[in-house]
Length: 192
Image 1: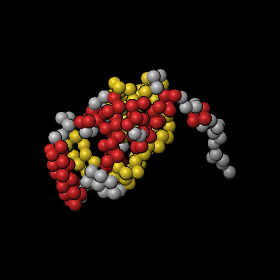
Image 2: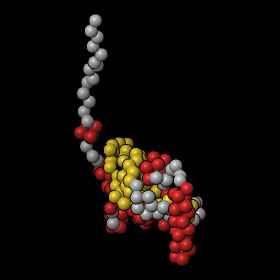
Image 3: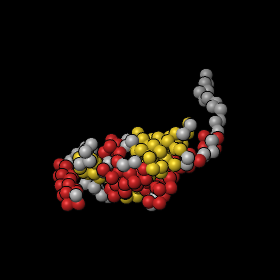
């Protein structure tokens, strides 16, 4: 007895072909790309003065202010720690004024990655490992009048930590991190 287990699946048009990019999707995608390479003028053009970054709670104090100032500070913070940094936009979905981007962030850990507590003090520092990583992230962006007004995200931080060599922690890694933290804290104390 010969049984055919194949199933015929109707062809589905490619979503990218079915839904051409809108202005809001273009603004959202450009925002993700400018985090890696945008200059201050680009942030001023694409970010509303009242824009909110809901992800800034562990970022440097300069990144916690609204508008282009805060989001540009976030970009500089990421660029300091991560070389070859960029986002590949895999999918974009839009409803009303919100665009959701499914992205893959790739980078190499080249500088201290510093996180901050709620008061803006240095919390953790991960000394550079030189390791590359590629992690899935979903970014939600509210767009109004052609400008970003709100951003929040779901990120695979554990995946990034594993690929960057932060976890599982090693004795040598813990020592490097402690020394990097001391150096960052001394640098912030002198600049204050």
